[in-house]
Image (cartoon, rainbow, N blue to C red):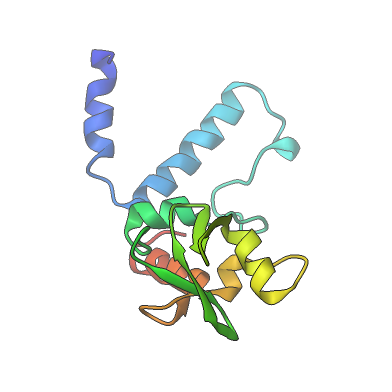
Length: 142
């Protein structure tokens, strides 16, 4: 690693998740300015809530709020058809490995399912979205 960046990397390791997100927004804005992206074509500016991308399941695993190979999930209103979370995209259900979405669609019979709104973690009785938003709130992540 370039010695000029070593101090930056060491500083990054000291930031909490909220500070990292804020820094990412500053860097994004500076890069867009530097490469000459017109203001009306820029990605969301810091503080712009018109388009918000929430962290996905992989990030929730990193945070430790869901645990692969330990957490059992079920779809709201269908608690008798649980699945074991295998990783950020797959579950084990009745001896099969399915994507989280395939499993949720299969047990509900729906064409699509917002798994963050409908899938519940058995050990705490909260949806993936509730757990995600709680973690973000507790850690200052916007």
